[in-house]
Image (cartoon, rainbow, N blue to C red; front, side, top):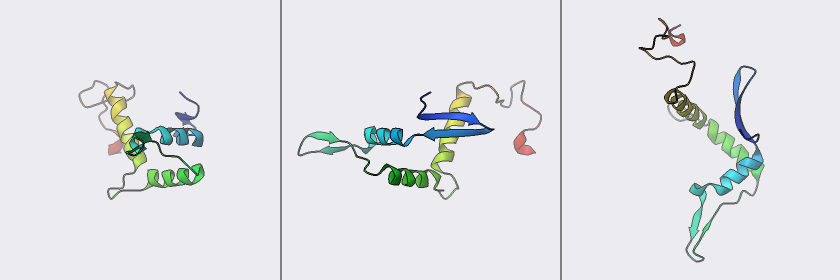
Length: 108
């Protein structure tokens, strides 16, 4: 893992970290934000002019709730749960698995 963008378990919590330097680099290199300039026939990237201001806006939007209460962060975790399960992650059981318990923690 890169030390400036990673996920770790710290004191019983999943902690995701992205350094502001990496945020700036990634945003400026993200193809989805590039624009084509017809006059120069060049693809122009955005430029982060105030990293702290952009970071605050990013965090606000990451935590903004949609009508169903989901956020970009919860959507990321949902995608991660699915990817982990499809990858054969340890520590999860499905109905029909021999280690599937009689009751789940969701039922308690």
